[in-house]
Length: 312
Image (tube, rainbow, N blue to C red; front, side, top):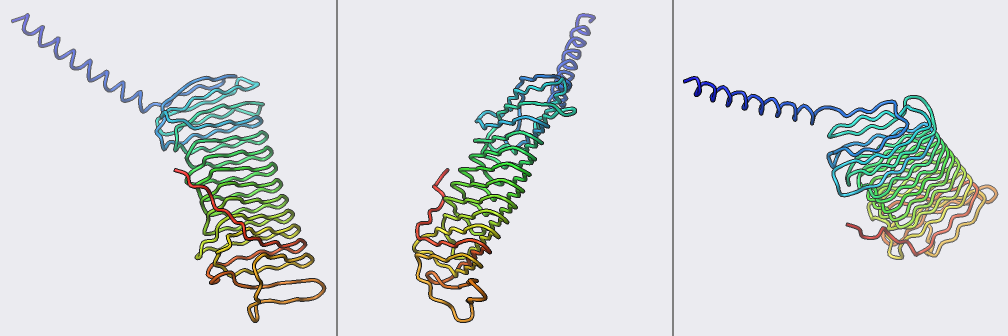
């Protein structure tokens, strides 16, 4: 009888141990991994494919690449012992306690949401195939293979992006903006810098700069709206020969040169004081709406617009 009781007690203890082990495993999955106050960090943690990776560097460069594995690998260094790292299954956060020079090299799963902040340093995000948010005061931003959404806000530095399948919103005070091979709507505002959009397929485009040139090379959707403007700079509009749009162009002290015939619409044009010129004319059936305006600069319209390349 004692043997039987001991056997049952042993089974009960084993079951309890398994249950306790399962509880600890579940708790471990839910817990956060923390590593604070280090000068270097080299680690790999699991992350959901739609998780968020948030990176903040005071002074230093951030480099992010995408990969097929559902994990984040971090290699980070800092001049001081102030690295802070926090990770769970849905979010990874890397930052600094205080300010110092640093460098982050991070790989993330395809589709991860990447948020990168730096006060002074360059940011490079390539091949992540997910949404990206960038905030930078001083430094260049280089982006490639972005999907879903691209949101960039900088104080000073050039912004370049290619192979983008996303709606794009960019605000910069001083720096050039160059986008190549883009599928998505565009809203770009710059105070001082050129804006160049090439290989674009979009329905809504707004590109405005106070001082700089604006170039659009892409397709024209019949239901689209396209606004290009500069206070001091040239406007270049390169659209397909079979485009279907109503085009309004204006310049105060520049020339207007168009490869499309300009047949003026009654009441929609004027030649004012000095050399001011404003014309409205149709290309094709005139369905889309295009505005190209500059106060001091030339407006050029050509028939060689190319849309974004097909990508999976």
